[in-house]
Length: 233
Image (cartoon, rainbow, N blue to C red):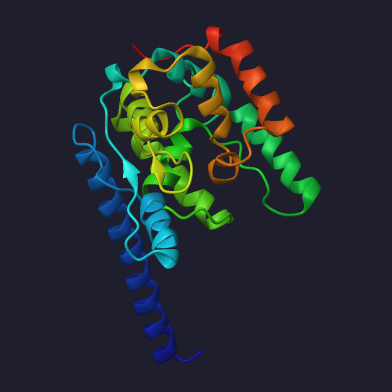
């Protein structure tokens, strides 16, 4: 490689690194803003709206933000029991869960499991796509560190419960409670909370298949463990 080519390569590399750093700063600025401001939308919501509008240009998302204290304690416990039993203990990553996921990925020869915590899932929902790749997992880890370093566990769970998907065009606990039970999120019972938590891994499928054996098994397991789940006050 000639000296000129090396010089241009160096400039290109510097520019690329600079763009990556600017992107990280853009993300971190949003993370800081959302410490006490509620996100109006997320990357997953934008993708969901685009998906809906492909079929119906007039489609709108169902989403209504509610503060932490207006979400049933039953749903908080059900979500932690289902998605991240060590939520209050870890600093963003469940090492044991990641080890199990790595073993599963190596066995399958591809990325099929992530061992994600609530914090990691929130990072992905806020900023990233649903596609699986090692690059996306790396960016997810960086955002998770940002969130865990600046937000309280209560804030993490509050935002998570308000932005995750619960069916086609349905985002957040309030919209989900009204869609499936015609009640506000504050009034969700133990059974209803377990049923909603069981939908989280595949909400668009479970929206129309809640009679499946797999779903009913998930509900039963969540109900068994949710009374022991520790959640922020």
